[in-house]
Length: 445
Ligand code: UGA
Image 1 (cartoon, rainbow, N blue to C red):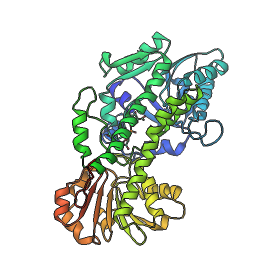
Image 2: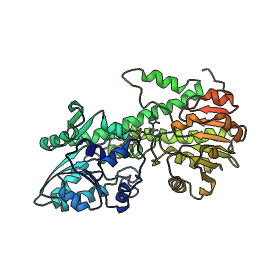
Image 3: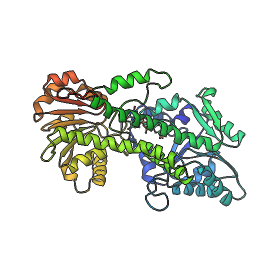
Image 4: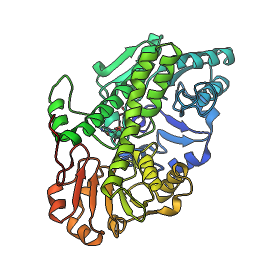
């Protein structure tokens, strides 16, 4: 909405939420999320044509177009529990729009939703919004956290799904103020909803594919960085989203795939459901596998050992730690008896404590969150790098070698550190998708 306000000065954008504290945070001096490049643009439009308000009904009444951007978490009980999306916030939003809107409103689903969700919105609006008219569009969002501003300013495509050509054209006109027309794709409602789920499923599938191969590289002597570089040079495959790592995190991939799995099962497509479920299964396996390797390298016991966790966010340039692989990996290490010292340049201590206490009950006294990377490393037996923050490339390994307990291990799950410099300081180095070069011999079959 900040980008729309910035690119379309003639449009008044009001962001509303039923939670007053959320709105207060967006109007305060400290934004509630870290997103590079967002703050200056937001500040330049705030109070002009960009407003944050908790007066939901008034904003709906004044609007020509309402975007529904509510969360759709995975259901935790009832039908479809653990897989299907909970659409209660979507339904509540539709009800609120039906009661507060004026005579004609374009309603846009921006949240990622199961295919056919627009039907729910339409049914509610038609049943409750008597005497008023609505057009429902699907306009899924493809930006990624950490690069959101650039993704929104220069999108690969904008997708608008809907039955009404006039409503589609009105929404298209908003994007056309900065997005080339040929990048705006118009489809029917269901294709648009499906394309969003499918895009995330494809991206996650690439990550699971390269992660599966990372394990294969480690046992055969291949190097996953060389392999992904070679694969990615094929223009039919392309080089992006081929970085092996500790598993995908974030609020979307797992949820969206499970949603797809649920829908496939619902329609009796059990083989298709199993296919996509495996993408999630490999992701869970990768996290367990990493914790197991760390344990094995530290003489099969983590009891009495101290491990520095570098990075807690699910990727660099965000302070978001929803579904971050760090949560499961820390849980496994804590279960093995390790003490953890965690450092992340952007994630708050409170957030880390909350996530760990939720995942590993009664283990929070075994973790310490440090504000300085060297304090986190001091006295540890091993470093486990989980997020690829750029600042980790500037670590002084000579200093590190003096403050760790030997034999000191560095486990690099993102393949971003310089192994030569680390080895020169007498530290042992293991890299995901390559393994430990110093001690390994490979079986030839
Ligand atoms: C993802 C999609 O990339 C966006 O297009 C989509 O709009 C968004 O979900 C959404 O549905 O809201 P996001 O979750 O912000 O965006 O982050 P990604 O950059 O996709 O990364 C997801 C996870 O995959 C991260 O944990 C990242 O470290 C991991 N990843 C990504 C890899 O391990 N290797 C890669 O090569 C790429």
